[in-house]
Image (cartoon, rainbow, N blue to C red; front, side, top):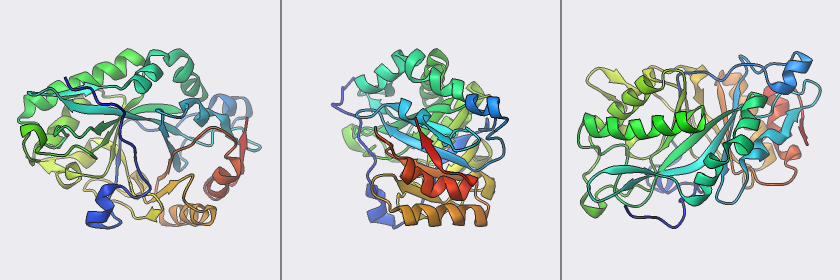
Length: 311
């Protein structure tokens, strides 16, 4: 198995934006994100039924625990509903697609008692993003259903072993065709999601809607949109809801913001539009160490009627 140096990172405008413009989406699995937070339990505040806020964390350089530092003034509810560990990889060993975690991601998993469990105890869901790694293997080029099932089994085992809340699919950087791998096909991603859903019926499955997998969302009467919970726009700084068969507005996210590069006025505007348009998800990227309460408040005031507090 080839070992990469570091997990590739999102950029404010991913590579595919240059090819296709500002469009696209991503999906969450069929388990839901409602419930009371630990802080909310003491005050009666819950996050059930509200627009879900998502935080992608670059764990190569930042701690996922930062997600749990933000609550809403007054209610004490969490500012974020979902933390995404970014990212593990789909690698290629010369014959098969294989699951891989770089040292930083593996450290988060190995130290789940101090990295993951405290967030979950607050009521924040924690999922693991899986990303292509420049080796030719991706979610859209498994040769058959059995191969897709084997990879899904690796993901399900990881979720179970480390007590995660689900898996996020991000079909960037696969470089289909490299190392003699095949080009994307119609069935691969559908079979992968089907297998993972069957293996993890009570967990989240998410799809950052980018890459060839986003163009192959149905096959043989099966639809990815029927097997996941949420889908969202992956292009930071843009507002563009995905269009996915089987998914209504409450399961979609049009807003995608980079906490270090998107203006607070844009974050506020996107939050207002999210409410007005009835979308169910608001996606953020790259929360780092330090006090981001002013930035986060620009959208929590609009989404939840309250400023964010840092602790």
